Amino acid sequence: MVGQKAAEYVRDGHLLGLGTGSTIRFFLDALGQRIQSEGLTIRGVPTSQATADYATKLGIPLLGNEVPWDIDLAIDGADQVDPQGHLIKGGGGALLREKIVAQAARSFIVIVDQNKLRPQLGLPFPLPVEVIPFGWRTTQRHLEQWGWETRLREHHHQPFVTDNGNYIVDMHIPSIPNPLELERQLHDIPGVVECGLFVGVTSLVIVGTDQGIQLTYPPGSEFSN
Image 1: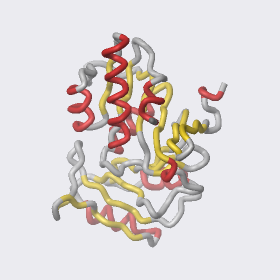
Image 2 (image 1 turned 135 degrees about the horizontal axis):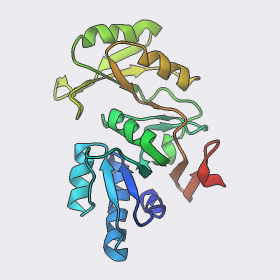
Image 3 (image 1 turned 90 degrees about the vertical axis):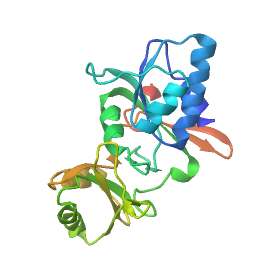
Image 4 (image 1 turned 120 degrees about the vertical axis):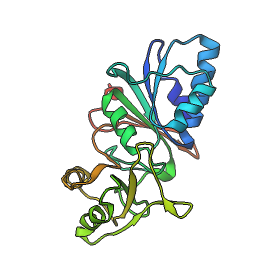
């Protein structure tokens, strides 16, 4: 439902940022149907190898690193959304590429179901922080300076490795009243590549609810005009 709604915003000739996650697959399915039925000419920039593989299977052409990206519209999911449209992302481990694409896009649409809406970011969902493997335990110790619990993300009892070859440390933060300030503080720590806070980039949130689709426009959204 949210995937089909998001696909309605795609226009012929668009360069699209393609997010990562189970919700995004519904969008890609709807986009693939529009390409087949309407003959849309679009290209996509995938934020993970999983998305690239799925988009290719659907016949969605992809753009690589040959040229700088002028992305018309990026569409992605989120793990949490607050009333200002700030996000926690990175549950799937693609947060670095997702943020690069989101910030390169003229518009950024987020698709979620209603249980992802929170009055304030924080637990029960941890904040993912991508770190380089070199010295990761030292970086993790820096991340513990606020007294919050941190855990190295694992997969099959081994460190989870991102598409970029990095690790993820999940920070268990009760609440994040000032996401922008925390994002800045995390970026000041050597070894931190990126964090899962997406602040001030969201143009529109498409929410799937029990009553149907709900559209939420963060402050300053170009879609609210």
